[in-house]
Amino acid sequence: MAIPRLRPLLLVAVLLLRAFASLPTQAAARGGLDPSPGIADRKHGSSSRSLLQDQPEITEEMVRGYMSNFELESAIQDFGRRCANISRTYSIGKSVNGSPLWAIEISDKPGQREAEPAFKFIGNVHGDEPVGREVLMQLAYWLCDNYLKDPLAALIVENTHLHILPSMNPDGFALRRRGNANNVDLNRDFPDQFFPNNDDIKHRQPETRAIMNWIKQEHFTASASLHGGALVANYPWDGSRDTRKQYYGCPDDKTFRYMASLYSQSHYNMSLSKEFEGGITNGALWYPIYGGMQDWNYIHGGCFELTLEISDVKWPKASELLVIWKQNKMSMLNLVASLVKTGVHGRIFAADTGRPIPGSLMVKGIDSKINASGSFGDYHRILAPGQSYEVVASMEGYRPKRTRVMLGREATNLDFILDPDGAVRRTKPLRNDCGCSCNDNSNTGKPFLLREAYLWLYLLALFFLLALYLLFRRRMALRLAAHRHPPPKRPVAV
Image (cartoon, rainbow, N blue to C red):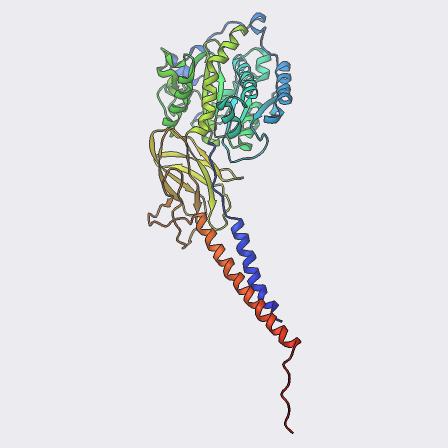
């Protein structure tokens, strides 16, 4: 029988089909000493800002009209029921006194992992700055009511995962003071890059630990915390190495200035500030702090965070809350939408398996990197528009690839396929929507194979195997026919 001879050919065909099925598809982008909190103020008295000075006592009249912690929790649960199709509610942990830290996720696929950027808003970091918790609930309800009829709302819901934590410090709010139930300022409780603040996790506040664990669980691209007592968009660094009041920019200073300016210019009057040029400020220039949340986010989470002061008064009258919401509405929406509308987005794949890998992305001249997600290998790199950037994707065990992009006012989609170390294959350049090719750092012109080239290769191979298979079938059929009907014997001469 000749059938066993066909088994190797059929096995090759199956392997080719499996390899073809594992090919990647093009991803569409949617988008010294341990100083106490006042160390800088003691050394440089002029650096203290007004919101750290004596504040008027918070009276019952001031509190009236604000949601209590119980009412806020009820509002969050009510939102989850009313907008269940585009949201989910969950707790990231508990406060010192056991209050759940409730969060809302808004997306067309809430709770699911997608190759999309994620943004988080955090309110009420300081207990005596409750404006953020009210404004963030207004934002959630506005998105719920308008995502089917407003293009900007639809863009956010369909192309991002927005997480909202209305109150990080419910105990401080209930006590009407800045710190939490242990009287610790939560925006001084994070590990610090310049001083070994809070290195012992056992001494860190539960609210702080909850935020840090949250960032490890979710792959946030950017975020913002809402405060009161001034009107300005604050960006890293928040402190300086020598604790002096000075401009101390982070590696992504241009990008942070762009983000802060986007918020300020979209605001009703923030950009008109006489105290802060353009309505934005570098934190260390305003006044240095240590153990702040935004710097920790950027360093340890690759998350670009702003600290937004959205009200000149720390605890304004409840009658003013709607006005404050309207003044900040477009700023908040535009900041979240910028994750999709600008920057460089894409996925990183392994050339040998075709599968996504959690590589990292760096930009030449910027000493920071972001990591792609482990689920889809997707990355979302915020960059200031209107400039040319050399983007490098890398991962241990693979050769890095780099390309140059000219980033306009719209987002650029850019996928990378990394060859394993020692690979000798030559490929064609992968084209992307910016019209550039992604070559490795050897500058030899070794490129990628396009998906279409793989397709034709496998189709030709399958056609060849099919032809061989049919040929063997024909030969077998002829042999079987010969055995069943032997030719007549010649007559024997006698």
